[in-house]
Image 1 (cartoon, protein in one colour):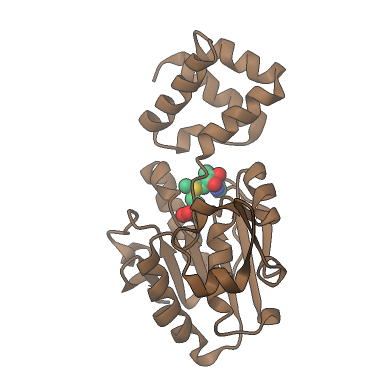
Image 2 (image 1 turned 135 degrees about the vertical axis):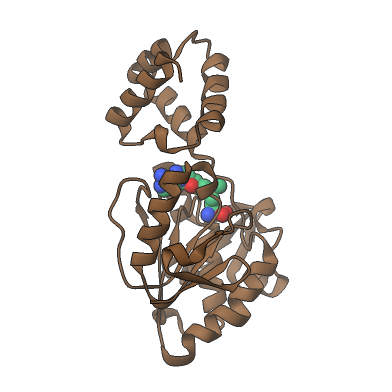
Length: 258
Ligand SMILES: C[S@@+](CC[C@H](N)C(=O)[O-])C[C@H]1O[C@@H](n2cnc3c(N)ncnc32)[C@H](O)[C@@H]1O
């Protein structure tokens, strides 16, 4: 890694608390180099100076590095398994579930969970914690207003029940919004809360280095109760789940064994 980029990584960590060295290097560097060049800076040193002087440029940089793509019921078949197998299994001996949607982006994922749980539980029994590093994404998540393309996979009955159409936009009803509490949380630096029945963390681990990923898997296991379920993205299979005291429950779902 050349010096210019190493120095840039250090300064960004000091400025924002985000440690870019824990993200896969080639991919991150490519994204940031193309943004830097688009803005006309010859090297990361001059780009960093510009980020310090111009908050809008810093915001654009944070936006580019976080990658917020999401949608409701992303990989629909997995959510069917969540609804028909995971939730009934967990509710066998409980009336409430403690759930964390980590790296929730603009909220589609935790709201999907809330809409599924509404089929089983009254609104006041549903409490989902949803976290992301990106404060702008969290602001949008709290608004609960989405373009049609975010709803492509939403079954019609749920669309009718929980969304109100307003021209090209869809707003979520309050009972679903109230089920979710959004907070800022950095998976690479912050403390992990405990005693979750379910942790959903999808489509973010792919960006992290192998070492960072292993740490986070350990942290997630420590945050689950025994028997709790960890739901990962559809390219994020864990190859040796036993290393983290997990066992396969269904494709892309792992259960904490002890
Ligand atoms: C592609 S989105 C995934 C959204 C959702 N989980 C899904 O699967 O549709 C990745 C999210 O990870 C967040 N992210 C990136 N690095 C993070 C970190 N260190 N801690 C927490 N969230 C992070 C980004 O801000 C972004 O919102």
